[in-house]
Each structure stands twice: as C-alpha cells, then as structure tokens.
Image 1 (cartoon, one colour):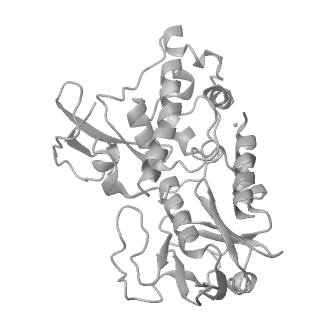
Image 2: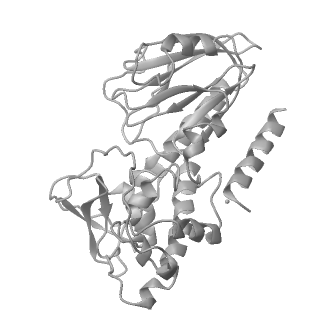
Image 3: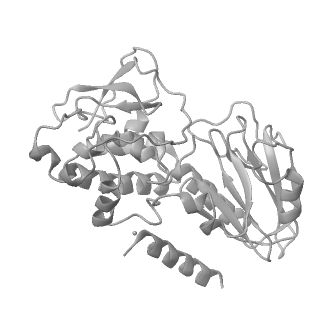
Amino acid sequence: MPELPEVERATRLLNALGADKKITKVETADDTIVYSGVTSTEFAACLTGRKVIRAHRYGKVFFMELNGDGKHPVMHFGMTGMLHVKGQSPTHYREAPSDTTVSEWPPRWMKFILHLTNPKNGQTTEIAFRDARRLGRIRLCASPRTEPPISELGFDPLLSMPTFSEFLTLFRKRRGIAIKVLLLDQTFSAGVGNWVADEVLYHARIHPEQRCNTLSQEQLQALHEKITYVCETATSVDADDSQFPDNWLFKHRWGKGNKKRKHSALTLPSGEPATIEWVTVGGRTSAYVPELQKLVAPSGRDNQSTAQNLPLKSKRRNISQTCDEEAKPSESVIIRGSTRHSVSTRLRARTKREDGNNG
C-alpha cells in the first residue's frame, strides 16, 4: 500500500507537471466504488476548465487545489493506486506494474485522465489515476483540510509532527494496545502504514507487539525520533527504495519462505547474522528482528517510568486496515543485520506560507 513517502512523491509530481496549468479535458471511467459521493461524470464536469493552483498532501490523502468556487478533487491510493504520466513509467509502490508499458495509453485500470494545458505554450500533459484493486477513493470537497477524510486524521510526521511533550500527551489518551496497532491508526499518526511502522519500530528497537503502556521514557523518545527520521529519509529520495539506506529493514524484508540470505551491509552489534521474523499484529503482517526488538513484559516501575500514567485497560478500536502481501507469519529470513506549539497551529502556519507563496 502506498504510504506517506509514496503519496508525497505523487504530490510532488502533480506540482511539477500540473501547477499553473488548465484542466482542458477530463476522461473518466465509471466506477461506483472508487468514486465516493460523486459520479465520474460529475467529477469531470467539476474539474474541466479550471486551473491547478497546487497539489497538497496530508497523511496518505492528497488533493488538488483549483481556482474558482467549485470543489476540489481529494484522492487516496488505497492498496494499488498510482499516478501515470503519458510517455513515462507509472509511479509505483515497491515494484512497477507488469501489465503496463510506457506506450500503452490510456493505461489499464485508469479511473481518470487529466489533460493539463500550459497557457504559455499550449503544450498538454496527460496524467492518469490508476487503481487495479479498486481500494482507492476519489472525492470532491469544498474545503479539503477541514472535511473528512483529512479532518479525521492525526498528526502528519512531516507537516505537523508534535513535540515530544505533545507526543506523550497523545500517548496518554491511548489504551494498552500493541504499539504497531497504534502506529497504523490514522487518527494517531496519519501516513504511517505497514512498512513505515515496521521501519520505525526496527530503528527504535521496539517489538511490534509491545503494549503502549509498557514503553519506557527512553523507548518513547526513540519512537518519536524515528517516526520523523524514517519519513524524512524516505521522502528525501522521493520514495525511491533503491536509495534507502542499506541498513533499513525495508531493503531485506520482502523475501519469502525459509531461505537464508546474508547481507554484509546489515550487521548486528556482534557482527552475527540477524533473523527477520514475521508476526501478525492487529491483522497486519509485521516484520521485525527479534535479536534487536525484544518483547518485554512489565516488571515494575523501571519499565514503566513514563507509561505508569498511561491507562492500563485495553479498549477495542475499529481501525480500518488493509493487509499487505508479505511473508507469512511463520516464515523467517536470515540476513546480516545492523546494529501540535500545537499540531493544528503548525498546519495552519504551513497553509498560510503556501498561500502566501501562491499569491
């Protein structure tokens, strides 16, 4: 599933190719599942003839700010959504789709194609939104930032990362659920998905099943730091995983079966190979390194120096999740391992800066 880094890449692409251009034509494919609260015909009519001011992202949601008084297109990639520029390879998550060539147009599984015309030279760029599994969503919103789905999201690690003090306050509102489940809750950390959560926990040295109310001050500090680190690092290379650091779990987690693989770029502090194992947490497949991410049971105040003020009872949460296709929980791979001021205030400040730059 495309997560914050991949959606940030798509947003940058829209800004690079679409900002200040006029939508002269919109081709659509009827899909009553992907189009939410609007028909494909209504979607096309709303966009045609308007100018793209700028594309924005919050969490895994991105939208295009258009001129005029009409609504704005708000999109979510779901499991397999992507953007595809005519004449270029499509953006993708991990691997490029095997069923599409650069020359194939319109591309398979397209839901809409924007024809964007440069008013200065008349040149037109075509950008398609594709979704093979139909788990993405396309909406129209009058005020995207203050309406669902964005209004229901938690902090964004790049746009509105809370201070550590604010982070602790958010934590105190949570129950004794597994930390992996909390990270995947978009009302807590918007944009963090399965691989980002696993990468964060790996670098923070926290087991994905560790209960939130058992985390120490040191663990929470590491968690706060690594959320920012992983998201900033991934977006700094435009979500190109070939440029991710060699000591990232992402580079080695995708093998299946009981095969053993060794990677000299990733070593334990002892220099010995590490084992990547899988466990199902909250219905999601989680990869972790047991030598570095140990599941620690509560053992008095030392292990709960910060969490002692957190609620201890667990409460079930209805969290919408979609499973990634990864290794089964019973599989393991041997590799060489290595060692909101407030959230809302920050988001408003960023919005003002963007509006000022667009003025």
